[in-house]
Length: 345
Image (cartoon, rainbow, N blue to C red; front, top):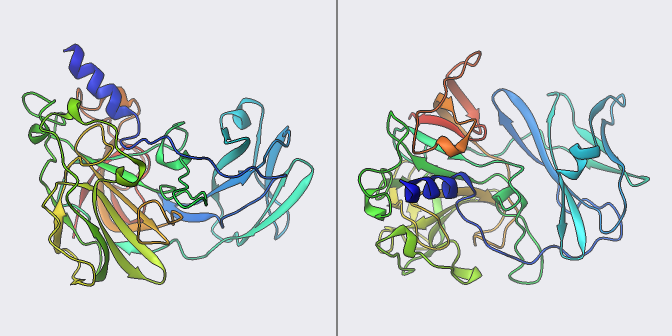
């Protein structure tokens, strides 16, 4: 039982964690990447990072440039919880729900004012990456080592590929993630599940041959370039790529240059690379390789919202909590943190 509690605690943390180089120090507040825009539970949300170097900050205030309305103010502990030391500087991570009409932000920080355009396009709308459900959408913006806050710099330039990444974990109706010995990878409910093309696309890149251990506890640390394990990257067009990570070795059914159709099986869910258990990592970025792109906004065409885990320590041990006040039929949006969904065609 103690081992299972430890495993659930590990799954409550990000499912792919790698120590990486932080961004180079900024002289003062700088926006290096345009805000990513997504729709979440009917709300338009912007995600961006303010590189502040060693500039002391008392607050960050975000305005709508059209009319000057204050959209958000972060100070005190609310600011400190978003400020993360990276290299010899710091980054402030902002997630902010916005009015639909907002097109440009003004950001006041450290005595400076920055402005950023917001795309009116929340990114590609994707088909299901997996069949049916229940599937838990595991991510959380404030995890210190979560996808949202981990920069990678394999070529010396820091990027944030997992800005909107989700780790998908299969559950049963009781909230269990495995049957029998949970340390055996093959006992995970999602292990071996068909991974599906989310759109008609061209295969941009494939890696196979990264081995898995039979036991989850035996999966050791990997070099940074193998952290994603076996993966498939689909070119969605318009400089956007859907990247699927941690596939079972030998399961990718496609090669670079192949054309795929939405719903086509392209691989099988596994836990190759740096992973604390079988799951599918999926994100959309502006480059085909897992660590060389900036994470972009996207959504799913349709899914049924079943509930949410407010406490991820319960994942694998208890059912999710039901949600009230939301239409369970969700369309053209990104699932919220730690919700449970069923995919629909």
